[in-house]
Length: 258
Image (cartoon, rainbow, N blue to C red; front, side):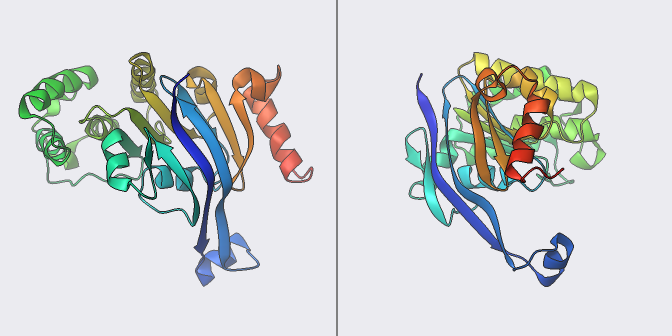
């Protein structure tokens, strides 16, 4: 298998505000979000990062996407270093997070064209790809409707389409179905499988067990910023359901605490 992503010893810490420290009941203001995290992903697979809220999944994806720098460690995507070659990495990836906020004033047509120009996509390719993607996700009927007037599901589908304007080799999604209705969530997950079939590599974070079982070829379980298990579902679960195995791992890491 061709290795597309290699993360080696990624570490990231943050300084908590006094209020955050009180809320999290932390003893110190230093929070370790990601702790010496290493894993690989291969061409044409969906790799899932599974963990509870606050486990470090989003921080990991933001480091891989070059949005934040690791304190130490590095990762290579398509042969480029996230630390030393961030611009080259950005040309190879598409990144989608539920926190992405599209400007209310603009339309899907404008946004697709704008981000295509940003990625220096040929205008003819842009026009062809926009027609295909808008039709695939039902955006074509709303192409000139301002974002402010779109439904939550349509905004999410537009965000997905925009993240893929340059046909990236690696697609990084943070909680891709978070907050979506069942129909929109199914549309998104079906498309992730289509991307895999087209030879793309998909990295996603989630805390939804059914999503891992349905989509992922391999999974990494993150607890407190550390990779506690990594492999195929069979390798990680050993005959158990992913939900049961996850709670086993969680209890092991927490010393048997519920």
